[in-house]
Image (cartoon, rainbow, N blue to C red; front, side, top):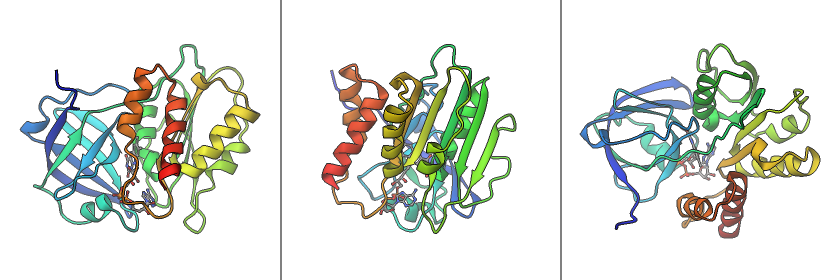
Length: 256
Ligand SMILES: Cc1cc2nc3c(=O)[nH]c(=O)nc-3n(C[C@H](O)[C@H](O)[C@H](O)COP(=O)(O)OP(=O)(O)OC[C@H]3O[C@@H](n4cnc5c(N)ncnc54)[C@H](O)[C@@H]3O)c2cc1C
């Protein structure tokens, strides 16, 4: 039996500039017809753009009517960034198998979502999918009216001089009473700081939070670490999401 991960060819049907740094791509076509969503609301796929071999990871903002929406952050430089800046309608990309990590414990009474612009697609989809008191802390450089569902309580923050201050914000949070779930994604160094805070100061069990490094500041090395094999090996070994992502960050540090 082949162990090769499933891949899908998808056509870019539409491209829409949602804000200065966020581009919405709607993908579809016959190649995506067999795609099956995991249903996990922070679900992501690998995206390989034309002429490239390396993939980058993007959240499935929605999968409806055999159309997949990805909201792509266009930052200063980058493989997907430079591709997504231009009119890419009609081009064919490759999408890899979907995976998800969000795992709301039964009985959670509240949800806190924290992230930068790259986490907005996941935070929007998560907030839409849960029926729970939800506080979103969004650190974004753009105005994004209506991007998050109206039921969520949102704290908007701006990066200062292009730098994230999500870690100190979370360290100073007033936590709600009772059991809940904390989900956070963004630049890896901020995420490492927060994992330590949650483990050492707040002493949360790993089932109560999910913290993922979505991108790494500084120069990307030629051979970046692919989270796919680390994810699969970790799942097969029965590790928690938190352990898997911590190992992913360590592997990236070792190679960076
Ligand atoms: C599970 C998961 C889900 C993700 N979901 C999304 C999503 O829905 N939308 C989205 O836009 N991104 C998402 N990301 C993040 C995205 O994969 C990275 O930002 C990726 O590096 C972008 O690729 P690129 O080709 O544009 O830049 P790269 O070629 O990877 O990087 C080029 C340079 O840009 C820097 N860089 C990379 N990303 C950023 C950034 N966001 N801001 C500033 N500098 C950056 C790098 O440090 C590097 O120096 C997700 C990541 C993961 C792991």
